[in-house]
Length: 382
Ligand SMILES: Cc1ncc(COP(=O)(O)O)c(C=O)c1O
Image (cartoon, rainbow, N blue to C red; front, side, top):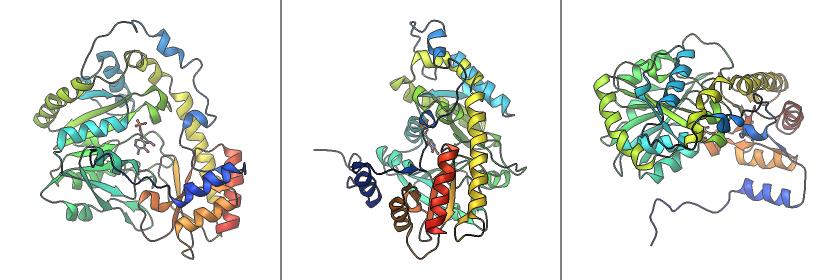
């Protein structure tokens, strides 16, 4: 009766069973998996929510497939602040980055087509692909003391049904940004490049080799995904955008086809589109507070890991840090042991890290809680 794509593994994993058991007993738990900024004690600009009510003409509906031009222009201002000139006609609004992925897969793929995705990376990609009947083929990121895109490995994964390469910059959870030389070698593969840049504004170190965006490419078709959920720490507003770049004829064809997809859904709400200029103009308060918190927690983590058996892998940006833990246990076993000690972390296998045990911790955690949790983590695993 039901579609194959709506079927999924529903039995809970060992860690979530153990977490539920612990919570049922009312046992205290310090959470190092926080990813929702609205629950992380982050300050926002005064009366930010009022922007929706203050925006003019929220009762008027002008259905526009790509979104209201005033909101698309606000996105081009954001690109300008990041050093890139983009025409507003190349910007399309969606309700979320997840929806943007779904629309891009509809644009580029037929059922059974393949898209290459990084491993380790964002776990939701697997479901976003499956829901569009797209087969996601992982390409392993290289690691030589720092993570990098192994373009030869990407090329090896290309097959007759490959329709695009997904990049996540900075990647969740490895924190690696796309570098300019990687971008030019990936462009040479001749496939559309879809770059998830939601964490782009959260750089933790400087690096002159870094591409500002996939939009630096001027050949092929490139699509950058971004949205309010991370850029303004406002996931509840449900507004994201995709921006197209590369060769003009390809961009024009993609926009013409995308219009049909966007017009069929018209999903972003008018009030949030009208409020977008103000939400972007005032986002600095939350973004800077998060940036400062990430740096503070990262410094604590580096200090605590020093001289222990836990290795903090280099982080270039984003909200997460990756720890390599001793191979005396699997990452799931380490996560279960830490849970016994009252600390919740994500095991590396959630992100496809492979055999070597890794743990992922959120740098968004409130600093006092973070310091306490890391101390316990090192006491158990270090
Ligand atoms: C890499 C990455 N992309 C996209 C998203 C989600 O974005 P949105 O809330 O706009 O769907 C997340 C959320 O954590 C993420 O980690």
